[in-house]
Image (tube, rainbow, N blue to C red; front, side, top):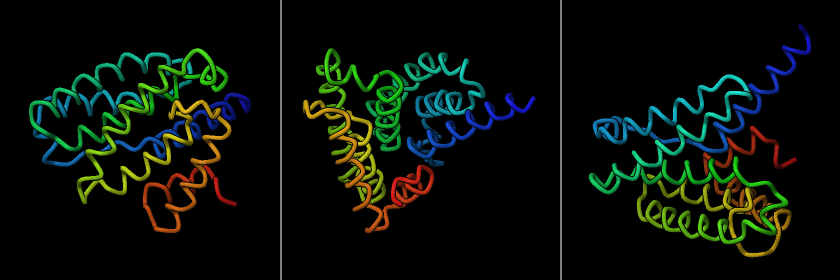
Length: 186
């Protein structure tokens, strides 16, 4: 019984970190768009997964969320969809790439993810509303090693930590929440 509670607590903590690390965005206006609403429902399904064993089903929801957010942005220009496309890209990358594999066979995959991420970040940075989210995700790209620069996961993570420290100084709310959750800064 105690081991089950400890395992459950560990999964709850893990889930909490992921929700903080990869924030999703929703507004009343965005929820009026059918594609956004469908994508958001799939995103919520991912964060509703209650056990590590069921986490494997996340990929299906993630792919469907990506497709709906893409349609929402292309058809309606919904900026929240851009933010959540970035969310899905980073979450999918972090869950699919082993740190050792990043240095080898996944370099092209990493580079493609980085380029897509930077395109999405650029769109968000052009808005005042999502500028801080864009800055947070830029630091997160380094933290999770999604930069495809051949420098290695540990180097890029260190760069990500330093970027996060700078964003904390500037009061970036996404970074402050993440740092509190993960205790990055001592």
